[in-house]
Amino acid sequence: MDYDAVVIGAGLGGLSCAAMLARSGFKTLVCENTGQVGGCCSTYEYQGYRFDIGASVVELAWVIDELFQRLGARTSDYIDLIPIDPIYGFITADGRRFCYPVDVEETGKVIAGLSPQDGKSWERFAKVGSEAMRKAFGRVMTRPMGSMRDMIRVAVENPSMIRFLKYFLLNFESTLCRFFKSDVVRASMCLQSYFVGLPPALCPGYVAFLAYSEHEGVFYPRGGMISIPKGIARVFEEHGGEIRYHARVRRVLLDKGRARGVELADGTAIRSRLVVSNINAKTLYLELVGEENLPSWAKRAIRSYEVSMPSPMIMLGLDARPDLDAHHTVPYSTLDFMNRIWFEDYLQGRIPDFGAGLISWPTRSDPTLAPEGHHILNMIAFAPYQPVEGDWDSIKEPYLERQLEVLEKQFGLKLKDHIVVARVNTPKDFERMLLHPRGAVYG
Ligand SMILES: Cc1cc2nc3c(=O)[nH]c(=O)nc-3n(C[C@H](O)[C@H](O)[C@H](O)COP(=O)(O)OP(=O)(O)OC[C@H]3O[C@@H](n4cnc5c(N)ncnc54)[C@H](O)[C@@H]3O)c2cc1C
Image (cartoon, rainbow, N blue to C red; front, top):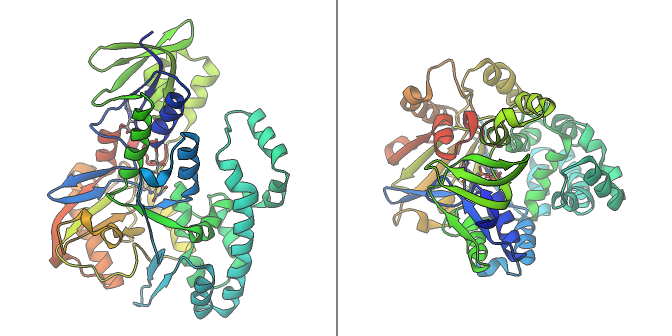
């Protein structure tokens, strides 16, 4: 055997697993298709600007701390996490602006200014959210959930989860509506359902508490989002791990039904006792393992699994400071609107015409990402893989124009005159770059 373990993909998941294996004494190799670590949590330099290509902030930073602890290391020795405050700035269609600071009480005051009744409800929401994080969702997040047995064990170990069970059964929308009555307040907390790739009507209720958990701290890693996987990769290499770049795995080698290594696109065979995959499950089983090697039930199951939504991203390098108030800005969209653009646009193959779901301004937190005095904005939306408007490669320019126009008209955000660099990372680009089928962002 060449290695004890081969990990396919140097995303956050692959690197974390590889580092744990290396720390446990396994001779481990990570094979990565691109020339750098990070996958969806990565940063690329273009004409002097460092653009994040996916993730834009770190929430629940204790998960990273726990990983580093398990690796016998300390996060702060590897990653410099800059606190973000305020968490969000909002722009309503009539030009009103407000922000949610990290401080829970201060946020309560902002909400009370929008709706006194909801100001009170926020206290209740934050209390339930905080308890749920500590007693249920948070504790469950770092436990293995690979089988029904694992799930039962987690439930038995965490009996207080029962109290929060209803939020697993309710949807996001009804959870939010149980607490808040004002449309503006509901609107300020509904984007989070898309953080797991679903509209409020289809997303599980517990996700709504992200609007609280963000108040436990949101961070940006100095140097760009790639600093997180780079930090994990450093610990991995200190434990003797190896990363091979530009090493696309095209096949998992099997021996009597067991994975015993990988074959790279250039034909190199690497033998190992274990193979760990960090790539899309559909690609892994249907292409790398091969349908012919799967039992028929597994073939049916994996074929039936739908990949998540794609997320086109506009990246702008600006020669001036944008007129915004926070690292993340959310152009106002009601709950109803957030559902409609899913059912009436996205599922019908149309590109939702709403500017951007989220505007990320990383240079507000880390100015070194752009030349002095310049700034970066990343505008994240969602749209179908094959829009009726035309193939993504041919509609990049009109897409960019339209999104900028909507932002200017609806939210008074004038960016056009300050654009030095503009890039559109379409679902097709995402697929070509990270090999995510149909540009799916969440697997
Ligand atoms: C637009 C967007 C915004 C997001 N925002 C946030 C956020 O703000 N905060 C947050 O916490 N999370 C966010 N996320 C989610 C987060 O980025 C991802 O959940 C996480 O990075 C996924 O990591 P992963 O290791 O599972 O997979 P990936 O990052 O997809 O890593 C898979 C790796 O495998 C490689 N690979 C694929 N196929 C092969 C092959 N055949 N051979 C070799 N290598 C291969 C890829 O190149 C890639 O490096 C966002 C995601 C996206 C896309």
